[in-house]
Length: 258
Image (cartoon, rainbow, N blue to C red; front, side, top):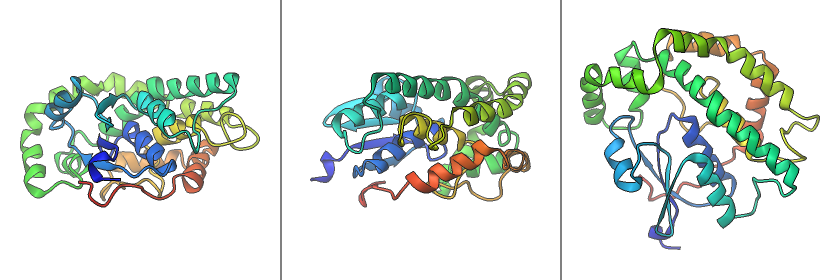
């Protein structure tokens, strides 16, 4: 297969939505190209590719797809084995409901908590947001932060009340996840599915298993370390770590990727 025929993604290293797509590509053994973009600086590229501002974006066979859930469906249709979407209608419906819950409710809240631990420290925030980029782009991002900070706060809902509300829901999210886990260790049916992948990927906003492909640069903000410590003994936290250990697997990023 020629390199130009490989599926290609544009992604943020740090994002749990982007991790969903990376994980699906790797789980299915799909060789692919990755283009890492920097939050804020990504907008011209995203709009040029897809007419909107969000990552991840997938280009495959000349077509553009965005929204992690839609991308996973596209990958399943094109590469059905190993399957991520259950065949039984009732199991598929449950898996999609779980995916929607973690995508639409849990993921935005945990992203809010995660970014709130960084946003008031320009040095740590720059290291996190530009990890993997060169010193020029990192310096430019930090220089632009005073001007762009109000936009980040608005777009992610980082005012005090919203952050506190999200922070207070963390235990409830882990408790609900614990209640979803079946006796066989999966959220739906008898095997690993899009439900398990989504739930585990979303929770990495505050867990970061060793198998997560892009570890956060050290040091972490002290508040993020404290949050991680608080949830470390939750059964659902251990479930996330176990799912990553068993199913995250190796990367199928092609050598010619950026």
